[in-house]
Each structure stands twice: as C-alpha cells, then as structure tokens.
Image (tube, rainbow, N blue to C red; front, side, top):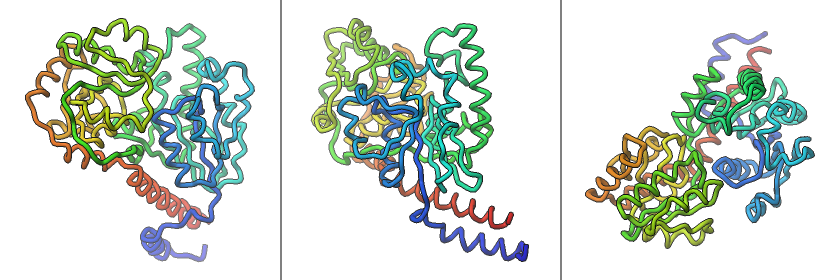
Length: 392
C-alpha cells in the first residue's frame, strides 16, 4: 500500500478540517414524483438551489395536477422514468407500486459522483449508483403504508395487496442498505429509520420560508394545510364549534366537503390562498391550530411562528421538536376534541411573545438548511474519498 496507518490518520484529521469541494463533481438529484407542491417539493427546491446544474430524476411529472406550481420547475432539467408512459399513473400512483423497483433501477446514474435522493412513499432511494459514488438520501420517512400499515395504508388491503406490500417492504429494506448517508427532518423519523432500516440518520430540519416580522392578533384561530383525513382537521373544527371560537381554514384536499359539513357558523373556509396574501391573515390570527398527532415535521407551524403567531398542537407528534411549549406555543397531551378544547381554553389564559416565536422560526430558515446540509455532504464526501484511498 505504501502508506502507514499513522499517515492515513493524520490525513483524516487534516481533511476533516478542510472538506472536499463539490464544485467539480457531477451531481444528480432524485425525487419520488412531481404531481403536487408539498413539503417534500420544498426540500427538493432547496436542493436544486444548492445544485442548480444538477438534473432531477423523478418517476413521473403531472403538469396538469401541479397547475400553476408547475412554473416552479419550468426551467429545470427534469428526467422521468418509463413510469411516465403508464396510463393514469399520476392519479393512481399506488396502483403501480409493485413496479417501483423497476422504475428506479432502470435509471442510468453511472455518470454521477454524487447522488442526492429525496425519498418518501415512492422509494426514490432505490436508485443504483456507481460503487465509488456517494449516495445521500434525504428521507422524509420510510413509507408508512409499508412499515405501519395498520394506520397508514391508503385503503383496506386485499390478500394481493398484503403480499405485494410484503415484497415491497423487503425490497425497501434492501435498497436502504445501498444508501451511504441518511438525512431526515426530525428525531422522530430518525428513530423510524433506525428501527426499520437499521441505519443512522443525521437530523437536518427542512427549509421553511420565514417572514421574520409581525405579531399575533385576536380575531380568529387559523388552520393552514391539506384538508385530508390524516391531518385531523376535524378536531380543530369540532373544538371551535364546541367553544364557539372563530376558525379560518386555509387549504384544499379530498376531505373538504366532509369538513364543510361539520363546520358551524364560526368556521370559515378560504380554500387555497397565495403566499403573498398570507401576511395579513397571520396578522389577525390568535394562534395556528395544528391538530395532526402523527406529523413528523410541520411547515405551517414554523411559518406561523415566523409571523410571530404561536401554535397549538398535540405533543405526541414531531411538532414537539419545533414548538417550544409555553414559549412559542402550547402542546396538549390528548389528540381529541376534548383535549384540544382544554388546550384552547388554557392558551387563552397565557401570554406569548412574537419575538420568541420569530426567533425560534429562524432556526428553520432555508439558509440554515443549506448551510447544514452543505457541510454534512462535504464531510461525507471527504470521508468517502478517504475510505476509498485507504482501501486502494
């Protein structure tokens, strides 16, 4: 080998202080699919800002369903898999889940030195890379319909569905072992990655756009997010019905009609509201209610705190890593209507300061995310390069 262990160790110390640059490396980004603009897509946008020349590989893209949000990706180099040609895949992606391994393994990424995947339900971390390339996965969560099907399967499972998910779960575990480094959004998901994949994960919270000014008002409570069953918006509606508190609901989703039928006279639905119209809405909000007890990370709670608005949320979710109890919001123990009613009543007897909320939110700004992830990747590249050098 011609090199002593002492010299290699000394080089490791020297190189750890000066991580390698990625400027001259060929980089590819991989993302599950593009059919909506959600939390995962916000992370993808930040990754693209870090590596603007990198192509983005994705299973498929649905321009029509993205609507005006498609403009966010208009000038990107987006490359789809052959899944793009399958009929109605954008409307029923789960139907084709048995083909997921073939979507990703059909991609040729042999030209890239660094591959960064943004992985969730569609297992984009399954891509094959060169043996000497570094694969960093930002894992939003191991697919919960595979690993926790009792409460997260999209629909009642048939015998075939149980068999298919069992096979896909085995594949998911195997594919995870090919990833060199995992990064995730919270300690909650890091524990999930450790349990299901037997892999360690670095926690770097996702990037949130922070307004950094404002304070809470006193006109209404506010919900911002998807109107789907898993978000448990009905808890907020029923609690505000019971207490006769005004609640403004912002968002769209498959559960909209049911929620509107539950709503009393004090509940107002605003639908989808453009970002530039949100500041005056936050300015009059008493607090953001984020009722989902199963969230791993909440963009809207951080956004609200960035406007100086405190948050009311259940303490079982990953939001406990975001909201500082009794300082930037109130965490309640029971994710029930009664528990939320008690929390609202208690909240109204407390005092919260806008500057504390804003200060906390700024810890999740996009610039912080880019700095942390950039340093993590540089160090990972450094260690990866050194390991190859020692072996050689």
